Length: 191
Ligand SMILES: Cc1cc2nc3c(=O)[nH]c(=O)nc-3n(C[C@H](O)[C@H](O)[C@H](O)COP(=O)(O)O)c2cc1C
Image (cartoon, rainbow, N blue to C red; front, side, top):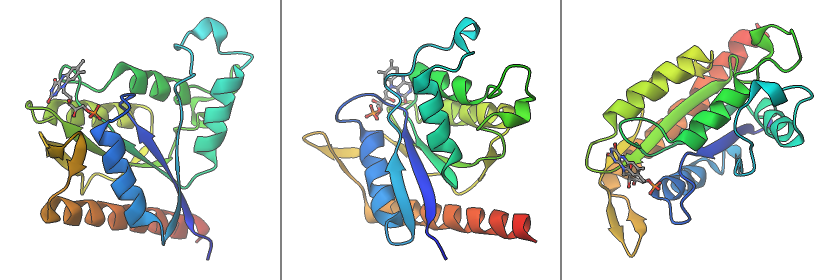
């Protein structure tokens, strides 16, 4: 059987992002069972319905990458009790129909398996997690509701994320549950 393809989306644009480091730890856990890639959406324009059609090249590139994977794993920090704006912009773009006048079910977000994790500051990130769930539901992604790893004020050394054994264990649980979630969905589809 082909390996499942998982796309990591990192909600922080910061170079030494702890969420990026958590995504790298997740990718390491997945690597024997999945093909893992990381989405670069730094050149996406701000969403603007005036420029939806013809679809800008950068938007098309990102939609193709999302269409081509079995699942998306989002890692994001809490920004002022919500998710970062750049990530919202990406999710807005992928929530839109792919052709003028086409139904919303053509959007690449539609029915795409998704899971998410978060490293946040002192405010725990709970509000951002709740808002992310609502947003993913609204754009009709197929959400794996649990387990979800959320790490508050993680331990770091010189900017390097130091995961505890317990945190590593929870991340592994989420990685394995997501592969299983996708597998069961594919089996249902092929019945
Ligand atoms: C604009 C901004 C707003 C933030 N708001 C919150 C917040 O509401 N709650 C929280 O727990 N942390 C907040 N933080 C802290 C970040 O969530 C935290 O530093 C996180 O680790 C950053 O993720 P990164 O290392 O992946 O960039 C905020 C940081 C920034 C830059």
